[in-house]
Length: 359
Image (tube, one colour):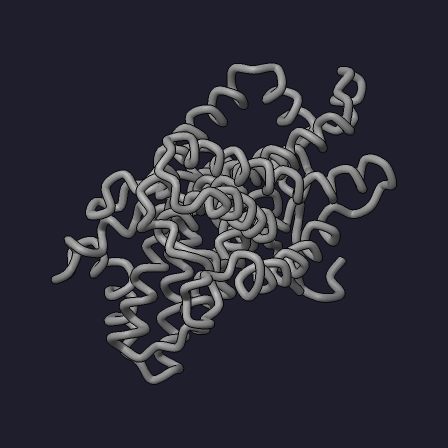
């Protein structure tokens, strides 16, 4: 009989090595998955993890690490603040979408002006759009005790419908020959987030780096960060220490929504270029994997975001060159979170084998 026995104290060695072990186990399990699909598992793993960095066209793919990694890091930093306090925002995808809609809407309202104030106004609108969308589950939880997981998740589908409505209606390009989608914002100098497109640099990359630094300072040098960590690790002690749960919920959900909204704005004004029906590509959900793979630590999230961006780019290469289905790449990415959570269990518990019926 196999049973789990609680460790006297968590294994520090496992806690530190779990992310790396999870990546290795994911490679093995992913290789078996690719073999079952009739593909060479070693070639598939090499294509995903090696070719984007050192392959024949690495000079083209390397800048994409910043393009793909920036929104993941920015969203994951916001989510990690809530996760550390036991506040579960699962609707970052909706907040990301609303940030893009609000930011793009403000910019397009002034098209084709070249005023230097347009992009700052878009940034503010994008941040407020994501923040306002996150405030819905936050206020419902504070006032009525609703479950923020369910409310934030359901709002994702509302945001998707608003995205489709805007792509076909209010934000639709009047010169687009009837096709859904807005004007190409990335080609509009006053509104684009690109800094150096050939190098993958846009303002979202800068914002992600600032978010990493500010989150590190907040969690390690500020009383608010101490309250966040204390609430997550010892809720009862936090209450005795005078931490106000309502304020913490509003702050954590609001901050995660704001950062997700910013990610959406920088994406629609740069790499994506327009509001379209298929604008949201799952960054908000993938960022949950990034947050946990990075151990909810700002620096860890930065590294995890680059790793997940690598799987996005390598997955696209494997899909085009090897014929791997897109669903297989998504399963491969999901395995990372699955094995990470499974190995996390072993940090606090050890597997014990016993003979059934033995005294």
